[in-house]
Length: 380
Image (cartoon, rainbow, N blue to C red):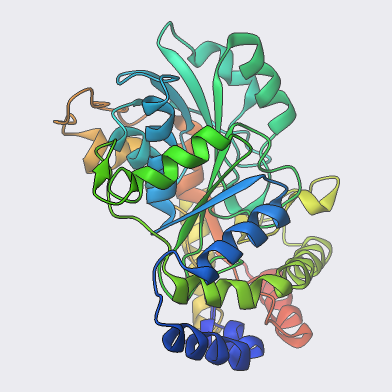
């Protein structure tokens, strides 16, 4: 392991260890392990934290994305084969969910300053089949939701949000429905898989809940062809124990990000933009760019050799993955091929030139200084 690991989950969970152990004991002793009291309490608490009316816990983040889309289909607001605009540089889960729901993902290039979908490109991506936009708050920065929502209202489109990396970011949950992942590495992470759908739409929340429970609201009465995707009480109890710390953890991440942006002066390294207000970013990762892939790769090797863990989010955009780039989707109303090399040059260039450095709230000031020093000392 690197001297300064990219992320140390044992350290992240250490401040909550006693409450996590107590939560586990309570759940085990309760005798109720799926969709019980802890699940309901966390659904309500997290929905309130994010300013939403309803929260529905599900098995993981991908299920949250898929089920919110499927619910809109069941409610008659979408049809199989409808097109959903998605960022070309997102993690493939965003695209997989659209396909899994029987919809068609249409990639749209990002804004190079924010890494989020570029609102100025939405118009040219729309067709007669476009019915929705999936905004992804990549790296923890809120997408430009006022412009995205205004564009959607003018054209009668639904607005979906992939909030998997944006727990607590100001400006998210502004669309019709949002999906969260609580994968252990997230700003608010479980000790296993977990996810949630947030919305202000009571009908939508009800259908999502039914879809995740075999399509059933009343036992042995199945209205929809649902799946088994439910937030278990053990993970809900862990998340409920950690939720009170989220604001403090996000503030520490902002503090570290600000120090990086102030202290890193290397002309070979392009720093991310700090939004105004800064609360629009929770810095799930701190991602820098270089002019060329060879520089990024050299920086990655240099930092690793100095004991500093780094990761690339993400090395291959969805349209160049074998799942979408070479083999047409065999599912009914599938999305087919997203594109070929050169179709989305901004996403492709980002994949070649981005590198993320440690930004977890458990970093010490001395470690932050060491990382800044290493970044400034890097040369070709």
